[in-house]
Length: 118
Image 1: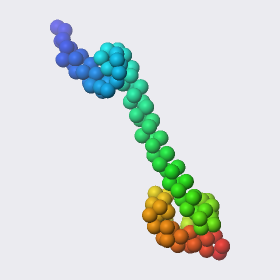
Image 2 (image 1 turned 60 degrees about the vertical axis):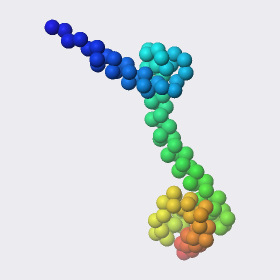
Image 3 (image 1 turned 90 degrees about the vertical axis):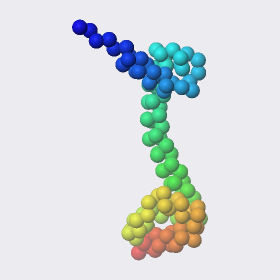
Image 4 (image 1 turned 90 degrees about the horizontal axis):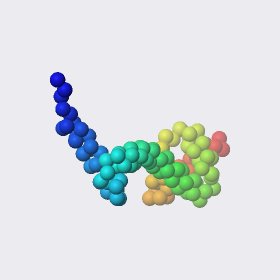
């Protein structure tokens, strides 16, 4: 005997239409079109989560590089010096120091310069 799948069918469609909330026109109401739009939106969402992380890391690097230039170092010389001096500070913290505590960043830059000179 065949088991009717009406509940499952309507739940699946309802889920897609719920995800298409906020879309315009048929992309919101028409299941076939909404399904395509939702799939594409989810793909973009997945990519964007990764691109966001990439962009933020690039922003940190730009900020660190700008602060390093004020102390007479390039970004790569600063990072190399910190590595040689065995100072383990991540880019997020360095960028934060560069903005909110320039004196501490200056001390790190001088330590990096000394490590490169030695």
